[in-house]
Image (tube, rainbow over all chains, first blue to last red):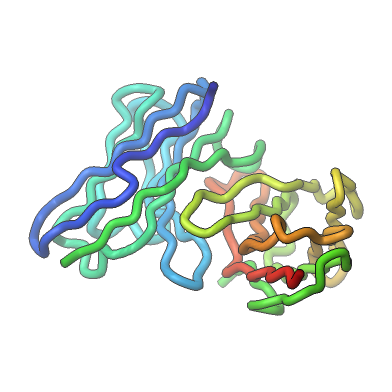
Length: 114
Length: 112
């Protein structure tokens, strides 16, 4: 079945460590996104990529980095520069970027900093 | 700045009743709106969408109403079931923007 796979589902990190969250999609979608969700809040855009080898900062990109070397993959690295990284991270994709259709979401990765 | 928000953080309804979840948006240029459902610990799931050239769209047990005059969006769920319990988000964007902007969500609790 087509879909978006995020891993790991749960991740614990010590302060000062970088961690990378994986996101893979087999929907042949051009655009991919990373959102952060904090308890009781909506989703905030971290980074997005509308095409391979290109990506743009979202509203809260500081302390995060991404790459888009393959159409199917859009990994997110949470660096030690991110001051409050504990959150639920959601990856999504869409056929095209912008206002052209719905986002399909993965099941999320919950990161906890110890 | 432009934002999308929700009037009620929690809505509690009896099983079988109809539910109405509201959303206000401030970007007058928004032309595409989506409702998502998020169950605990999972990613959001698409429910229904509507474009600004429409004021009503119906799906299976769900209806979305759009009032562009007052920049208001609502999701109606008919005959609410326990499986409808979740957090519901509205999201919006306009042509040329980079991604959807999400509201803060409304938790729907269905009482048996």
